[in-house]
Length: 628
Image (cartoon, rainbow, N blue to C red; front, side):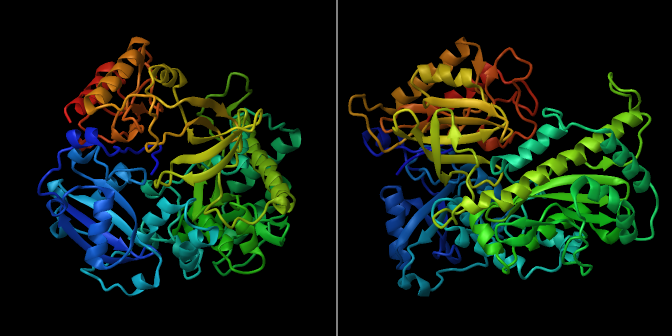
């Protein structure tokens, strides 16, 4: 077995036996799943039933109990004594699932397995795909409608083909009500949650926040650059005239949304192309140009949804545009399936509600990912807002901003038109991969082939890959991470002490609008016989030395929790994830506002959202390991 970022593993041996004391009276609650991740049994057992608590012993126990052949074991522990136990290997689910369990994501209550004791360890097990397992009678079954989607997420990019990965969502979306109904508050409240296969990754609720769109297609990063003036949009007098006309017509009142669309149609068509009224049955967008693809004129971009005023129609037009996209790309007709096999199907969304406009992006992984790329922009003048230093008046600023946003949409829509019409022709259908990989395949002097997505959390972008040096064709297993910030200097200091993976690349990339971090993959099964096999005390000592060296250089880490400390094959500690790290004396080295302060992490008492990250906070977490 291998270990990669965000996980941990103790190798078998005398060091492990002396370090780990098996706790007593801990229930192991498990869910047995068939090859399609459908629950077939739920039960629990006490760890006292096992002589040695390992992956192999758990597999053997469950195989005998249920007369099945166990394939994969996924575990999340709420008992901190198990932090370094060998059951926690590279497919562990860790904190992401702990949050999910607290939300009763599986439908269990504390009375069934007494989660409140904080002594339970959940084990998710999949069986081998054999005829024998299709007829396994439930040992003790509870309804678990939400299990399958989570484990499907964990498997993405490793075991499933694109057809298998998208099949659960496609089955749901083809039975879904029309978008105009699907986006009603009552329907969203009931169906927009992680456990529902038809739910979109649109950030509502926050657990359904998807990955940054720019990781999978560069057009979304370009839109951001154009809007933020990092790339010149080249506004002409005609653009400013059209923006002024759009403001004037948008601020009028209309009898219905069709009348509003007709009034602003000419402005929109001049900016973004033909605005096609596709259908008035609530199942298709209010408008949007049909664009040419290699498979025919079957894709829409952007998807346009218009409401007469804010609140009209009892739904959010942006949500309805997203629902229109989802139902359109999920169609099983024309040659859309062929496009799904080649592409993440990127598109823009344009929502208008009265004199307000918002633009979003959408793409398809195992299910649609939706992101609102702009706030709701007032299509009206705001005289109270002070003008920019180089401006003539607030009205000019508003006209210029609206023109820049819509011109950015047009430029990026033209990019997508070229992508669908020509680029996809040369791209083969994906048969062995589960979902589209990141578009960035050339990182520094390496050609990168992505092999596995490592995080089950939808918003995180962490991949195992093979990197081939263009100079001599040597290959190396790597981890590629896309993140908003990363402290290369702190990583290098810890690497010099032998306690971090070798960093191969770390820089901001404009085509993904993210930091791209690539470092060597840590193989916990590979023992270097030229080095000493460390005991637990030696491992902790090395960890302390590395953190002290980092502090002496003026840096702090901020997140030395279990998932960010690995052990290699010689039990040497490896610190990863320097996302929060930075200069200890910098006012910008702070904890994120959404930091999890769960008491199980035993963080320093001064740790708080937006608070400074201090060396004593790191030392506090390091001391935890010395007491294990």
